[in-house]
Structures are given as structure tokens and as C-alpha cells.
Image (cartoon, rainbow, N blue to C red; front, side, top):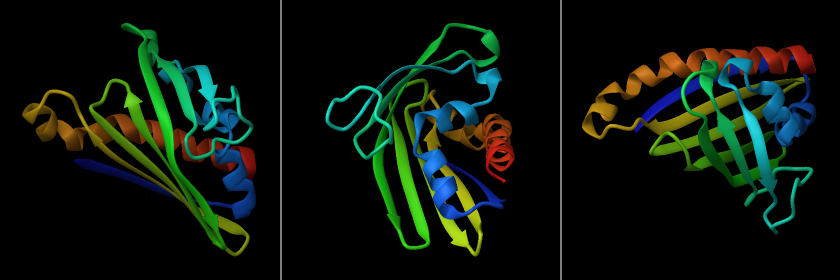
Length: 159
């Protein structure tokens, strides 16, 4: 699988950065408008609708229509792991349904004094079998603007 990584230093404490990324309004705020994101339904691990925090077992049903072109793509993300211990925290979401055969996004956070180091790591596989595998590294061309926006917006909202 191909891997994409992007790191940023946020001038805000771990608690604030972690809380912001743990809520659906954080996802909505961090998704660039050009992706045409709509959140259709959020379900908590016990089946409750619209949980306050995206705990392990939560699912998010979304639609994407990048640049408003083409058909709306359905995407279902599942929160697979979520843990905070001391000066570190992370959560992992995977694609249960969507345009890519595989997607695993690890959001890692580490306190550094009054700042937080934020690392996004995406392991993914593009469609198309062997051709998709060969083109995998090109996926970064699509991911870079999205994650650059996410980190810029995190800084703007929390610093």
C-alpha cells in the first residue's frame, strides 16, 4: 500500500487539538470546500445518532463531490481506534465503503510543551488493480492540497 504523511506544529495544547479533532464539527471544519463534503449520518458505537465524541466504533456516512463534478461519491468511515495517554493521543479511521479499495488514516498527536505535533498518516490503495498500485504514489498529488488545508485550518482555528 502507498503511504502519505503530513506533519504540523500547532501552537495550542494537546487537550484543545485532541478535542477539536474528536468531534464531527472538527471534521466538517477541516474538510476543504472543493471536496463538496456532506455529512449524512453519524452513529455512535452503541447505535446512538449524532454522538458528541467520535469514539471507537462510531461510523460517519458522508458524500463527496470533488469540485462539484461527476457523481456524488458515498464514503463510510469507521473509527477503529481512539486512545489518549499522557502526552500522546491517536485515532484511526478506515473506509468501510467508498471510492478507494483501502484507506487507513491515523491521526497522531503529541504534546510538546504548550504546542502539539500533529501527524496525519494515510495508508491507501487506489482502484485499478496493478495499475492502481503503480499509480499509488501519485495519490499524494490529490492528498497534499487537502492536508495542507486541514493543517492550515487547524492552526487558524486553534492558535
